[in-house]
Amino acid sequence: DMTFTIAGLTDPAIIVPDGAKVTVRFINNDTDEAHGWLITGREPPFEFGQPSTPALAGAFAGVIGDPTAAGDGANTITFTASGPGGYRYVCPMPGHAQMGMYGSFIVR
Image (cartoon, rainbow, N blue to C red; front, side, top):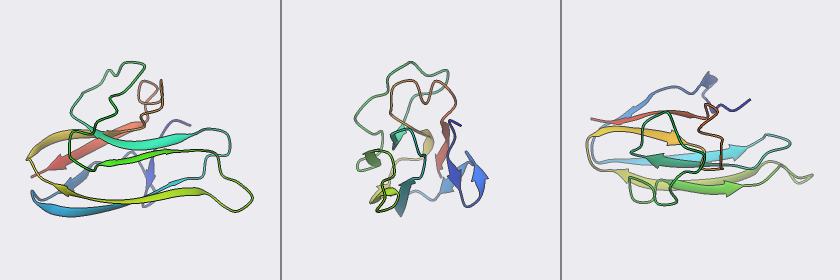
């Protein structure tokens, strides 16, 4: 299933005020796929690969591999949502955003 689950919702729109300090705890609990999290200025339809530089500085949780016996892979990032506009959060793994693993990130 190429989706993000946030607070029990699938690929929800995230809306934050301009200048907000945003903390994201990204957890990959998919048992057979590596995933990541990145804010991009691109819009769907997405290409096979995604940029490695986020549209908002620091808005990249990296790629996290499969869970292990020690638990799910996780990464916590904090960034400032500076720059009003519409963005997308995507999985930067090749093909994942193309298959629907993205959502809206709006800075107002």
